Every structure is written in structure tokens, then in C-alpha cells.
Image (cartoon, rainbow, N blue to C red):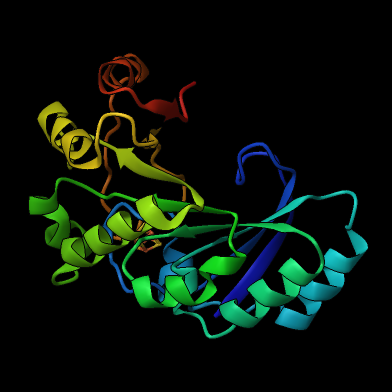
Length: 223
Ligand code: SF4
């Protein structure tokens, strides 16, 4: 479900001034999810596809990109027509996805300029973290497809002690290959709490920075 639009962002689409469009609904149940409202979709939508298009028509020349995020945008039937319409307005399009919906991704891929895919954890922990059976197998298929797609992409992992040892991260680096773009994101417990209500801890910024250097990863979210 299309939920909301943030009219201006300098951080959601690297190198672009973007609007960010939020979709509700997700097939994963990551306990540390910072957008529980978008996963369970208990709120009413604050926008509609036609509102989004009308807004973007007024921002041509001021924004150069649109970021679709969630929740999991690929679960929404509103996504394909929106992607098409927004591409028609001349915007570049970035998609944030959990990587579990390859067929739906392929349907819209020709109109995407950038894909950011979450890699939640070491494959052995994947189903436990996502609450979803065979989740790694599905994400792994998407990873392999995206690498060959010719579309700009990044993989990214939100890192925290509860789910990630340095050995886990090293395993992911080996799986991805040494030069594959992979971003480590610092976890910050949001004031409103996370999906499972637990208080997750973060690694010190210095730990994450050093891990990034050792693993050839960009690091985001440091203070
Ligand atoms: S973190 Fe992402 S994939 Fe996981 S439940 Fe939240 S929206 Fe879904």
C-alpha cells in the first residue's frame, strides 16, 4: 500500500536530491525494524498515486530523483504503474528492497536506475531474523541477478551485536566478492521502539568503522 511521500531528501538516493515514497506492508518481520508502522500498516495512507504524480510534476527541475522505500515496495500493486509514470516525468528512480521478490523486481527493472538490497545477516541466521522460511534462498537469487543486471546497485547491512559478529560479516563479504559494493549501516535504536519491542544495542562507531575498513565497505550512520 502506498503510504506517504517525503518531499525532499539528500540522503535516501546517493548523489541525488530526491523525494522519498513510502510503501506499507512487508513479508519479513525483522525484530529490529525501525518502521513498524509500515510493516503492520495500521495507519491510513496519507497520499495516493495521483497525488504523488501531481506533486512530482510541480518539482521538475528542483528534484532529480525518487526513492521508493518501505516496508517492501515490491509487494504493492501501485508500484509498477507509479514507476512507469514517474520515469515518464524524467526522474531517476531508486528502489530499496529486501530482495525477496525477484520476479516483481524484474518486471520493473528496465525503469530503475539504482537498486539497494538489504542483506540482513549470515545466511544461516536469515530465516530466524526475517521470520520467513527460505528467505536467504530468495534473496540470494536476487543478489546474483542484480550483479549481472547492468543497473547500479548497492548491498547494505544494518549491523548490531545481537545479529552480527565480525565473522558473520566476513562470511557475507566472501559471498558477495571482495569488490562488490556493500555498505555497513550503524543501528540506532529509535525512540518509538522497534518492531519486536526489544532494546537492541549498537556497536561503538569505532568498531563499525574498523570493520568497514577491514571488509572494504563504506560505513553509514556514524556520529
Ligand atoms: S527491516 Fe525492512 S524487511 Fe525487515 S520488516 Fe522492516 S521493512 Fe521489512
